[in-house]
Image 1 (cartoon, rainbow, N blue to C red):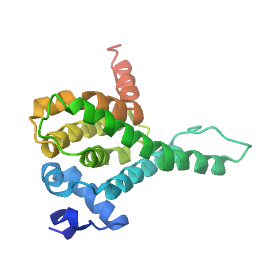
Image 2: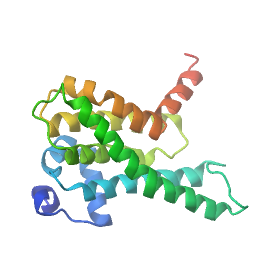
Image 3: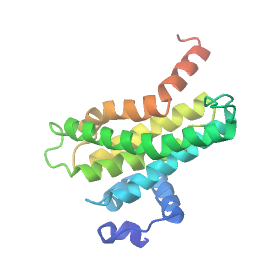
Length: 200
């Protein structure tokens, strides 16, 4: 096991390679990852991870979805760079911290031995790992990424905050709806599928 997982309190590795390793670990061994790689007061790697996920997702969406961003002044590429920059540098960090604050409040009745808010920030950030694929304009892919992300959030909350799976699911339902349902457009993908299947 590499140092960034064994000893997170000593400072995990930064940079693209560390983000890639974290992405692979949280997708393939989530329970072990949340148990060993989330540490109090070490938000920076988690924040960088979430921003990287949003960047890949939004860039994919721009490349594959026509008219995905409004064009300003007739400059399509510059406009896309502007909107992606806003999503990555402003919206993602703000949404992450606001959702973490909400999650902390919701945890109060469910996890008396819960960890700190920085651990919640990291848990939400790493649970977005599947959403690197959320920009692909295939409803099945977008739905699966969001559902798996919500599962990872519940698992991470249970592991990091020392509570049961049922309590974690209840506590994380609203944050999952905000982050994955609306933020990564999972609700829209599911609605599209239901219409295709003539259910609604």
